[in-house]
Length: 331
Image 1 (cartoon, rainbow, N blue to C red):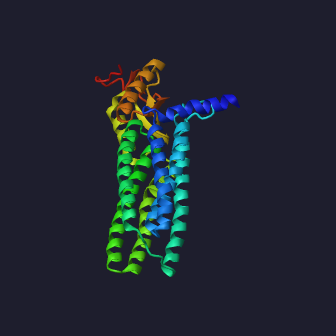
Image 2 (cartoon, one colour; image 1 turned 90 degrees about the vertical axis):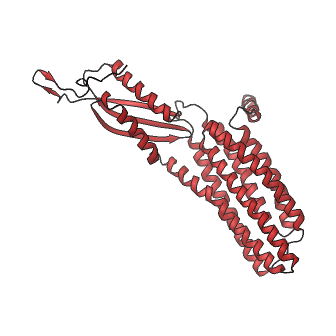
Image 3 (spheres, rainbow, N blue to C red; image 1 turned 120 degrees about the vertical axis):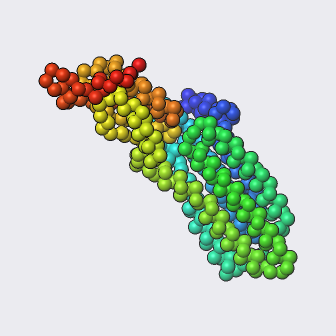
C-alpha cells in the first residue's frame, strides 16, 4: 500500500512539469474549477441561465480534465505482455464518458429553460455578469492557445479533443457576452420578459455548440474502440508508399490498420521472391518503414512477407518481376 501511494506521488510530480503532456490539462482543470465555482452561483443568484449554463459546461470540463489526465497517464505507457497494442483505448473511453456527461447536463438545462418560460425570473446585475464573462473569455483564449501547442507537440487524441472543447467554450463565452449586451439593452428599455426569454434560449444554443466536439470526437472514439481502419486519407498515403516501392516486391496482397492512442499500427502483406533471405526481406521492410515514418512519425510498421508460388519460373528461366528489373535496389 505504501509503495502504491509513493507511486502516485511520484507520478503526480510530472503534472506540474512543462515537458509533460499532462501539464496543460492540469492548468486547464484549475482554470475550469475557477470558472465553474464562480459561474454557477453567480448565474443562479443573478438569474442568468446562460451564465449558469456556462458554469455547468466549465464544471463538465473539470471532469473532462480529470478524465484526460487519467487517460493520458495510462495511454502513454508502453505496450506490454497484457496489452500488446498499448493503452491508447483509455483515451477513447474517456472521450465517450465526457460526451455522456455533457449530454446529461443538456437535459438538465432544457428542463430549466422550460421552467423559466412558465415562471420567468429576471436578470439583475448585467455589469457584474459582463465583467465575469469577459475575464472568462480572456482565460479561455489563453488556455486554448496553450492547448493547441501542447496537442501539436504530443499528438494525443485526448489533447486534440480538449483543443476542440476549448474552442467551443470560447464560442459559448462570446455567445454569453452577446447575450448579456442584448439583455442589458432590452432591460434598459424595460423589455424584461423578452430579455429573460433571450437569456434562456441562449443557454440552449450554448449547449448545442458545446455538444458538437463531443459528438464529433465521440464518434471517432467509438470507431477506434471497434478497431475501425484508419481514415481514407491515411489509407491513400499508405498506398502511395506501396506505389513508391513497387519494384521491391512481386505483389501487394492487403493492408491492415488500427489506432491506439497516438500510435498507428500498420501491417502490410506483400508477396516476395521465394528465395529471398530473411535479411533481404528485412531490408525491404526497413525501407518502407522509413517512408511511412516520414509521413506518420507515431506509426508502428510491420511487413509480412509471403513467398511467391514460383509461377514466374518457365523451364530453366526465371521471370521474377522483382529480379528482372534493372532498377531494383533494396539497400
